[in-house]
View: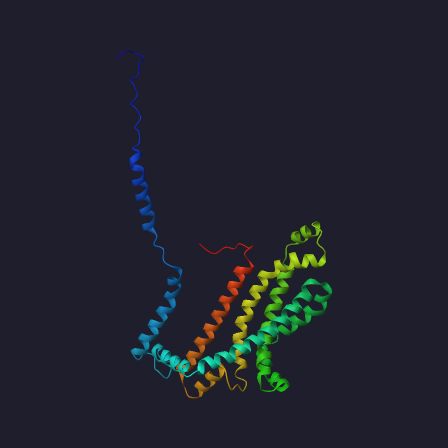
Length: 289
């Protein structure tokens, strides 16, 4: 070999283009095989199903005595009987009317006071201190006074629900109004919006997320207040069924009423979530990973 001459380099290997689809298919299969996608509704149902299973096994083996807590099968049969004779639907209708009336009155009062206090410094000076003082009073402790003032009919029950819901809406709407970004207000002013234009197009939309949060808290409190309210000489409603079942040690009927309370609460929360998706489409949020 002559000095100063290097051997020729081998020609570069050309990839086989025909193998690319097979490689991509194999890679895709491996990636999907690492993580099995489970439907979200199935994951959420695992906990309740396991709880029911443990409950039923404990009742069937005698670990859980019937007089302490009825089995899920007994509760299901009792629920079917209450639905068949119309007792449970009638009780649900009465309770729903009470909650709707109390929520409407409490919501109107709470939102009105929040608007007065949040939109005006004078309104804040006149309203906020009084509301903050009253909200620290346990509203359940007002039952004796409500009975004295309003009697033992429907009025104290509705008033108790209204009291329980008004403060949640007031606090969250007020916080939502005062939490609006000042730069948005300045931008609205620079565009020529007047006071009421700012309130309509900037402040109220900015306070809407807080109002939705307050509505969710208010609904949860409304069902809690209903339980206490229907203990005031009630002759109809879900609470009346529970009181009757307590006198006869019917744990199955008591659990049915509790399940109905939970179901109605979840239904109300689902309605608020739907409203949030419809009214807050402009507000992207983190939904988890």
